Image (tube, rainbow over all chains, first blue to last red; front, side, top):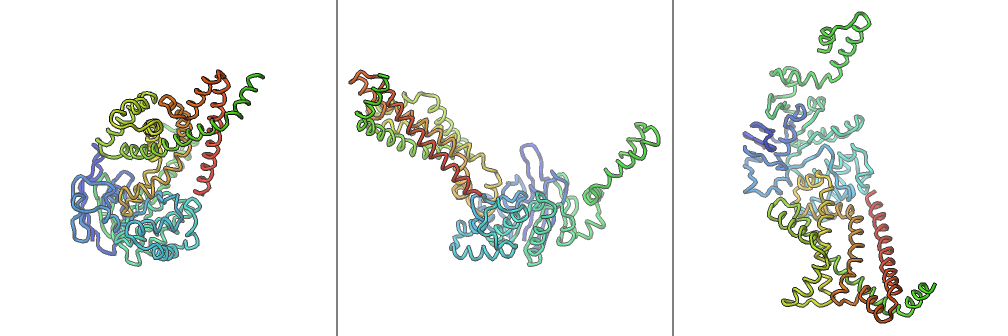
Length: 272
Length: 221
């Protein structure tokens, strides 16, 4: 459904994507993982042309998309995107956010758009918030509205750019639940995420990126349990046990210090 | 005492003349500022466009207009352009004031638009909205709210600047006070009265702007 070949992206002299090749099938859920700065978000933004890659090809539904020959607005209308910081329109009600693009871009009649919008809001569990304004909602609710807003355009594929990274921990679940439901319904999804649990549970394909390149791609069992690359392994151990190493270090240092004078060497060893 | 009596005397006696002049001042200011807002918005959009040529045109306009005195611009249009087309004593200063304020308003709008989070434009574009639609439906409504205070300030400046129209024979507030001063020799009284009229208009207008500001804040809740 989406095929990417040799994608290169520079920001000025900064080489952000160094030749990305990727293929995503219909109804597949792909999770992009990797440290910040590895190019995951940029890759996502290149797919709906919020960023324009300098080189490489993007194929959607067997058709090569080029900014010169294609109306990018039409492409974007078919590719939904959910942002880390929600980006809801603060001057519009929740329902107003959802129906804006269907009415203004697709020319859907307002009554019909409202009906569909309300059922989408029901679906994400926010039917009762239709006439609230975004700043009256919690982060989790905002993100669910943002998902409904993207779905209102009936996209072929949904892109999620760290959809839960800005949320309080107790609100992450409600957003992930909506995303899981979407996945079950067969939506094609590309998700940039730090939620490894979600990736394990939902993804058909997990892609680990580092330094603008795809280091490793495969089914979650392979990536999480038996990564073929050392870099993947290192990254996963850092992400899955974020508190382990610093805790151990401090314990070690504490235990060492009362016993005897900590020499520079011992301290260094303990920290490492 | 004598001065205050004089002011009161002429305030009452000349009330119809001054009221008519104040009304012309309001019309002049209103016409100038409505056109000025259109000009300002137009050049603000040019200035933030990705085209260097359009940005350059906007910069040139803003630099020239902000860099030259208003009275020079009024004379240029009233006397200078008269050879091509005579706009008359009302529209000459109105157009000059519009062009003049447009340059400042352009900067106000530009700052307002650029103060809106970039994510708003991205979200709109990601939904398939073309740039002009996203600007009109998403960015500008939010930007307008933010520019109300500086725009109100610019309107107050514009109202007072309209007094320069007196020098191209528009019978507005300042022109009338000059004429009455010459006729009665009560200069201080007449200019005090003109000042009172301007002050009253500015106070009322400021009150309306602050009301509007509060209402817009409630809307966003």
